[in-house]
Image 1 (tube, one colour):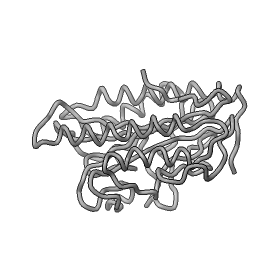
Image 2 (cartoon, helix red, strand yellow):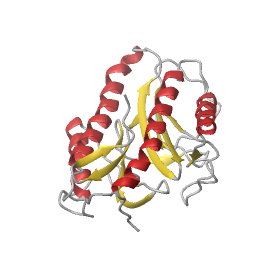
Image 3 (spheres, one colour):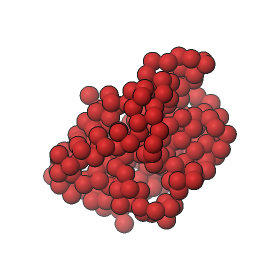
Image 4 (tube, one colour):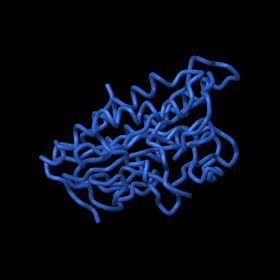
Length: 260
């Protein structure tokens, strides 16, 4: 069921958005060569406990997951792009890391993701390709947000994202995409990263959604790792992922997870 939020409820959602943004920034600053993924998860876990927030991931067990997730952030490294289950892996200079994080604060959820290169490596000619991939997801996210205007349709968001991806030379997987956000992390409507402008659910004031472009460098095909969660490219190419939770208002979209 798709629910529309009142202006007061949207204001009540802002603290969750700020906390998600601040935690992603803290994790990014901590993600240096030599740091283990489990340390990053522990950092996010401490912040959740200190804030009195509630993780949306730790007990999450949808049909596509092998078991309850058991951690509080997603850490997808290099050829992993979504749902990366934190494990005993030490980050190396030049790793491409995507962090996805969702929590509830005072009963309201926000969800956001960032991708970045760990350290300052420019070896093996990866730097330019990684920068392009990451930047394309960010540009696509901005385009999707700009298209999220009252009176438009979900398809306008999807088409805007897809146009950016195709111009950059990336193909698009629509198995996973954006979604409604509210009292739970995943709700209706689904917001695919490809679609036809003018089609789909109408964008009305009060609709709160997560928009999340994710692309792989040379494929759009993925498989599930043996951990039962982590989604990787079938050809070993790298992936990147950017996401914001936004609220649609009469004056246009508000980014609830905006990062300074």
